[in-house]
Length: 405
Ligand code: HEC
Picture 1 (tube, rainbow, N blue to C red):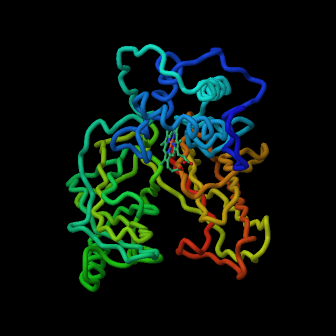
Picture 2: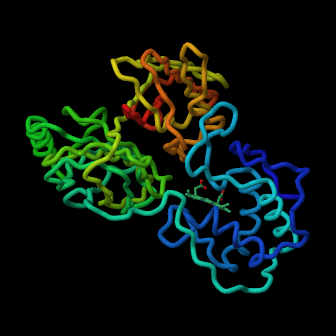
Picture 3: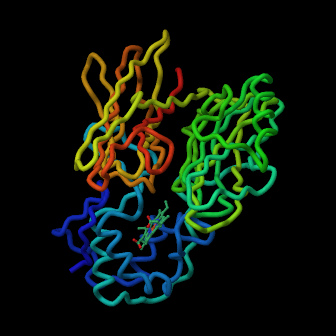
């Protein structure tokens, strides 16, 4: 029997007890290593996003039981979005098929044998690729010491150093103090007036950057949001976010220190292009307020918005966002010809807030309704929970990466 647990898994890995391992007695070198290389070492490698390496037989053998259980439960590789149905296919979807899961289970039950060592296999490049060039690095001027054991939202004024307009095609976050960053948001600043206001905010607050709990405090254009789960954020081909020449940017880092007490100077490496075919924008949509009664296993919040303007849009990807009480989120669209899924997260896990890009963009005609439904479990709460920025408050957001053809 494979190791089982009550914890439900994510969808998609079509684990199926009736599927047998394609190999009766699998070994590490012949059968398991290729699966780990293809699906796991993107993160479980030196300096990867995972907490340990899975690149040698000794490491895999020591963790064989956990590997069998997290794959059986579809908790690894992490990919909380549902696929199939009428949801658009997602780029780089990380999933194991039922045969791979059965094979890993059979290997673990057999005592995780090594087999015959083969010539070492080169690591595959991560699904999202790597940055092809680093054109700018965003980081605060000095390390910042987040407030201990609380939510601390800090804005840093940073320099992409592009004299001319450039487009952000990909970025990589190099966390300086892993484990204390909840998420990072980025804004481009397009005017000298807004920059002057920024300098005032910075000067008024001692230490690097300034405290910015709700918003960045000046006019800015929303560029991106990242949480520690994407090794590389790569925008779809031919698209990018404009970074106006000669202007600075603001990065907001939401720290949640759990007593680590570490200072942080995280760096964001940018890959820029002089031109892209489709400059992109990011829409952030949420209900105007949330008021979630306590003690209920299923509380729902909904909002809808209409795509307006004169030229239609194309949607390239969606990201869902709730805090820790969230249990599932659905994003869909309605047009005259019916309703379609855009993103469905059937089991929400606030640790895995990925941006899901589509293999092909979805047309959004003017007048399309975008619907967001968030479900929460408030049985752990004794007081109503409202919209707010602290980890103990809640949110219900969807972010839409759009262009105009
Ligand atoms: C996108 C990055 C990523 C990929 C791909 C990935 N992991 Fe992980 N893995 C993580 C992170 C981060 C954690 C720690 C946080 C967590 O447990 O969710 C983790 C945790 C684990 C754990 C410990 C879980 C526990 O509950 O103790 C195991 C075992 C594991 N991964 C195995 C695998 C295997 C096997 C694969 C491939 C089939 C894989 N991972 C693919 C990032 C990744």
